[in-house]
Image 1 (spheres, rainbow, N blue to C red):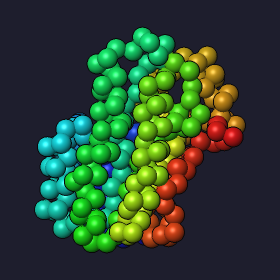
Image 2 (image 1 turned 180 degrees about the horizontal axis):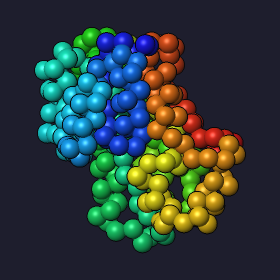
Image 3 (image 1 turned 90 degrees about the vertical axis):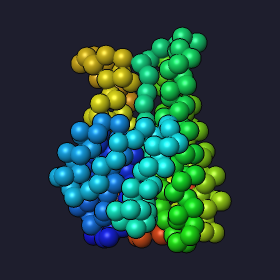
Image 4 (image 1 turned 90 degrees about the horizontal axis):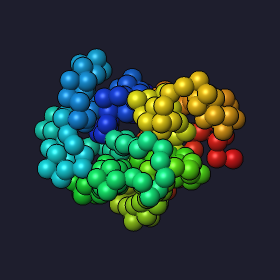
Length: 246
């Protein structure tokens, strides 16, 4: 119960890695705010784990303000922020991606980290404590071809994590990241282009442990990094990747 009574905001928390993290945090005693565009899925999960659902588009400043306000109104503060919401794009040459798709990737994968920090970091500074976790990707460290702009957005997130960690450490706020390998989530088919046994085999061949990551894998790492047991760890981008980046 390393997260007992802590208040955690998880963006994109209604499915995939976010759902896994929300469930694990609740099991470890946290009060979880599930922020997601899919209001029905967020409400369903909140009902199952005793959390709070907030419909939000994390690329919009007003929506992020609403997340922070809902957490304050219900729980009185925010101890943990997990920037999990993210999108990808289908594999394609870097000069073929549309400008609209590029803008959407930057808005969800990068701008959202700025927006949540703008709203939630001041609350953590006032309390002189907090933990922020950014869900990045092995793509930000060891890029796959034809996913250039997705890879770049996750590289941005890793650099932001390290810069935030240095700046916020004097305020008692730790900032870390997790770099998952491809996982059994709704985004998997997007990254692969199409889900066939041949393409799955190609992806799995790059993972020494020989399987995709699961929401439970990422949630276990997240629970540790956001707990007081990791009080000396900040600025780390932890690869949870079955050896892919070796």
